[in-house]
Amino acid sequence: MKPASSRILTINGGSSSIRFALFETGASLRRIPDGVISAKAGRVVRAI
Image 1 (tube, rainbow, N blue to C red):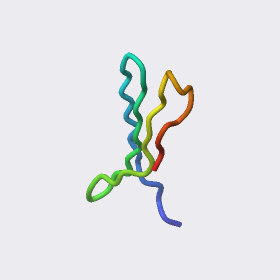
Image 2: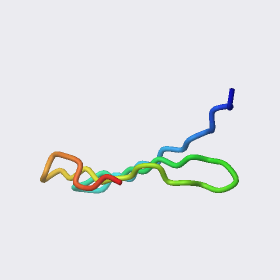
Image 3: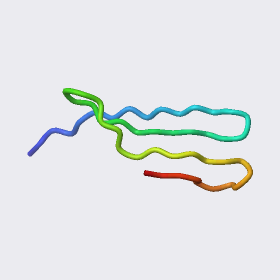
Image 4: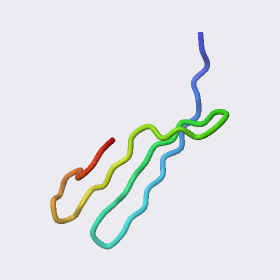
């Protein structure tokens, strides 16, 4: 069984939005999903 890799969640809160990204650790950091939650829209504006 393969051991689980560590992950890092980053959150950046601004005045009208929250940005987030999840990274998987290893030999290098790999971004998994990221996105923006806008106060105006009240939903995830962009997610990859």
